[in-house]
Length: 95
Image (cartoon, rainbow, N blue to C red; front, side, top):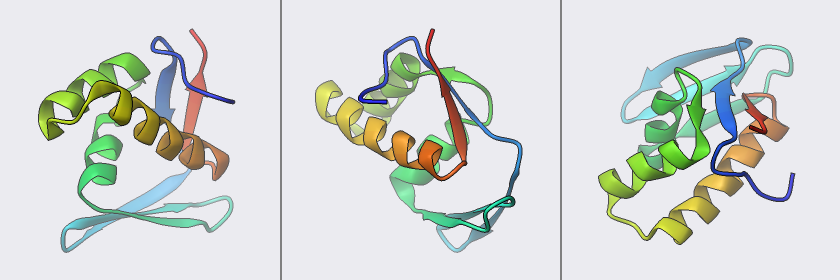
């Protein structure tokens, strides 16, 4: 996937365990044993993925919360989500 379209739906896969450790969320993909540690921004994204969400809506939320430019946010978050998908933490479905 080269980029994520605004109407693409993103959701967590069901095969993970998570815990909070200090100011981080630690997530383990059960099938692969892969572990990801998420601090402030990653954690904010992960929380929003508790329910399926459109990429555009996710970016709107993050732009409001972190006061970042939309294009920068979309690029950075898109890359992060593609990595999460690659390692089996989320699913990204085209609209």
